[in-house]
Length: 590
Image 1 (cartoon, rainbow, N blue to C red):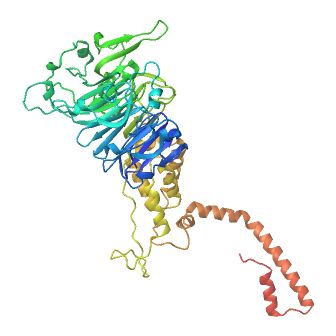
Image 2 (image 1 turned 180 degrees about the vertical axis):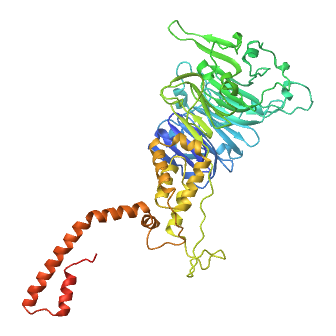
């Protein structure tokens, strides 16, 4: 089963429980890491140096991908035009890596998480350090543009277009604005987008126990980019309330007014092109940045003070874009307003997604495709809206034109069989395996099928197991349905459900016979033979054909008598031959 997903514009990454990494999508430029540029419409495992390694975290960007392994190594593949793979960049066909390559400059650091912007990469170490490399034209690496290592002369020419004043670096460097700060900031989560990076840090530890904002036991968000290379703290509002009337009366206060009873503790972050999302320990969602539809907060809402909004326009023919400078509560996500307790957030270029503790998914924003938001035919959704038929969701990843959802599944115990003993008692032995034969083909098939049951195929498998009278598989499927009924109902087709109910109702009154060993006939044949309806149907057929059978037998008997008489006239048969001729004539006894 999958445990993590990552999505980008042209491809998707999936990590399973065993640490194996799979990918699918468009392969141009080597972004899939499969060793070539072929497209993969179905999940394909990434091999190469990852074949014998256990992957721990993954990240996907438009043209490159990253992963970290259980031993702390970082691998990257895809486009390296801006040095985002952590190796020197070169123009031409060799600027891309079709297979994962290790980032050698991080071999002395134990990396536990990675994040990918469109043209830069971020790594988080076990100690809480943050490393960045790649494009730095918007200061998204967290260091000044002048201190960034320049490209080669060819790469510098590619960055000499009007408006480009920055450079790039292929060498991972630590973000000293966090690590060298006083007190030191240790990161626990990272996120990256096209022009910026944000990190979630642990509460700082001070030598003196002053009652100040820095000493509050809450996590802190820092961000940089969009032309600023200095990590800036994201300040949340001083008072948190679910009442919109209270929010309308809020006045922005300085950080010294924070108290322990009103502090906000963020636990999850997401970064998009022009907006940011955070969820807190009490399950609330905050957004800030550009475009009100991406933020889930309408311009005329009374929950925001007017001075927190800024608008800009470039000419009378262009629409105004609204922005909010500091995080604001998404009131529509509160449980009393139809939302839920948020546990995870994700953001793409112009839309946002939130997972709640009860496994529901909420989305809002704008997109190009009709079904990207999960609402049929909806391309613009300014406020949070629950996606129908989504239950037990545990992970979500947003891309520009598609959404990847990870659904949790409760798995019952796989059927367990004991091998048969060689003696004539046909009993199951539990004293050892020396005199035991292998499992039967049906038992082996049952175990293998049960291991591959999921929400999408459990109904067809249950129907087949009913028809074949495979009792262990029937019990497994019924238990699976009981544990995952909401999820199965949300993804199963109406035709499959109708077939399942009909088959199950037809077999409820049938007596199931238990077979300890394989016999000469399949159990289905025994059930048919013992079925009252089957016996009655056979008798009806025989009764309808009884007249035809009698006429046929009479004709055959007359033909046999005539043939025998002719042979007797020739004197060529005796009593024994006569009997043989009758047998060879093909007469049947009824």
